Length: 286
Image (cartoon, rainbow, N blue to C red; front, side):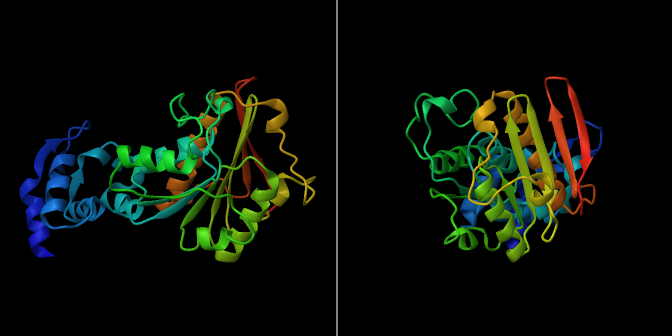
């Protein structure tokens, strides 16, 4: 669409980056205008701008991290699922949207309750009782309209999980029980999808990137018995801080994976101890 590209070029403005380098940028209002003019999506307009070396202003501060124009295009063309939209998943979904991951599947059958208010970024006094998946979708629509946010207000089961995740490039495990975590890992292996595991309890958190075929959860939770929950977080409790730390690290791992960075937490477990103020990386059996 040469005409489409030319229209975007006409709306571009020259600017200077914080590092002092000149570049061409396009504002959100201009992206909206040209998308409306050509009856296309905001995502399509942003990708076309990037292909013409024009940076949508919303991503200007991300390019140095994601690998420039091509890295941002990769993200906009990516499809990620967030499994569980509580303390971890609610924040993870928003961070993925702010980075410009183009399609997000938001999976959680639960609704907000008062006990969520201490740590779940999407929970407010006004939306108690509302479905987490719908609230997350609405939030993402306000943050980044280029992102296709698709809510699934249902719990993952053996009957539906494959259809929910098919076609994804990465899955974020933001669940709160081991039974569903292991089901997720088995499904990711079957569908050849990487997953980013995150878990929290009290002062502690952990993150690991699990590629299809890795031992992953089997190495982390050696004492797990199928059919039991074994969720230690339900005994120790969850403050506001550790979910934010772990969610941010999960998203960073997902972004690295999507832009083909090799420095992943694969076959390693990052263990965060905010009580002692320490982090350590534990080698897992591959």
